Amino acid sequence: MIIFDRPDEFVFAEGAKPGEVADFPNMLRGWGEAFDRTGGKPPMEWFNALGLRTDRAVRYFMQRGVSEWSQTDDYPEGAIVQHDGLLYQAIQHTSGDRPDNMPASWGPLYNYGVTSITGLTNANVTLTPRQAAKSRIVLSGALTGNVQIIFPTWLKDWKVRNNTTGNFTVTCKTASGLGAVCPSRATTLIYGDGVNINSDNLLANPLNNTGASSDIVLAIGQAAYIDISAATAVPLHIGCGDNQSYEIEMQLSGNTGAQLGTYLLPNNTSYTNYFVWEQLYNTSNTPLANSNYSSGFGIGGADIRYRKVFLSTKTISKTATSHGASYISASLGTSSDVMASFWQAQPSTNTVGDTTTPWTSLGTVTFPVAATGRILIRRNS
Image 1 (spheres, rainbow, N blue to C red):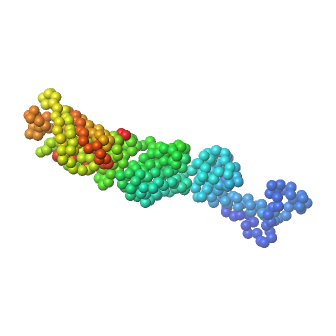
Image 2 (cartoon, helix red, strand yellow):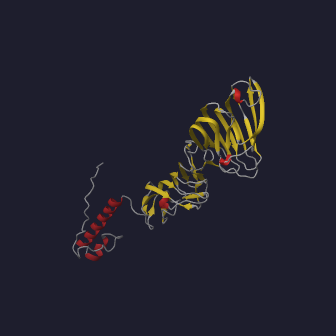
């Protein structure tokens, strides 16, 4: 097959003198019209007009690459058109269906650029076809309520970067379908299936929440981690709501301190003998139990190496259950039964009598000694 060179950019008869070009009188009939009008001898002006018409069509495609959509044309499945500066592909045979208004007939192709939605507060935003045609969406603003970003019902992938602040959620969805929560300070991969907006990557990459200055809201199944170094108080900066559940996993190192207890302070608030905890532990292979009041959810001893905590934020029955290994110094025993330093497997359960105050932030973890390591938080429901 011959590979043709790009033709020149001249248009036949574009420089014709006045009177040298005349529109062909009957385009649909063709040259037969010449027998009726000129005895079968078409004039020069008609030839110039046809050459001009043909070259202009060639130049149109050389400049644009893809033709503009026409309301009067028929398009087979797979046809590609331009409309309002964007590229679309026909999903099915279509005629008269405007590409930006008929997702059942047209789908967007790759379109260059980034769509930025700024100033988000508490109002939902419906993306225009031009905005949604971009593959990367960047959101920003100080949220004062939950926000929905409404996408077209396309079969398309997007990367959504959520730079908003505030303890509220951003959900990307279709007008009448389901959606996916896009957590703040994270980029979420979402896709449209023609009905709903979905996300596959919430479990894949935990969000780095180290050094955060405000609370974020995790989607169900999503995790965040905090790296700490020689810290005695670590705000988790995880916003929460009623009737949710979380796991906190801690891998830490440190030294035994002058006080007992590692605590979780819900809502980043200080308390005094507000919580009730029950604890099982062992000394010299002897199982023992203890219970008392505390000033926070007691989730470990003075020196935690590993700890797993399960939280329920239900307003009427807030609880924290934990298990793991803690090191207890002989001089800091949990009871008079403890006579020597030892490692102990230490499950504990905490409750709080307050049944009316909502739990809106997971809060702050406090250590009696400087701790180094990582805290991983995952939302389960």
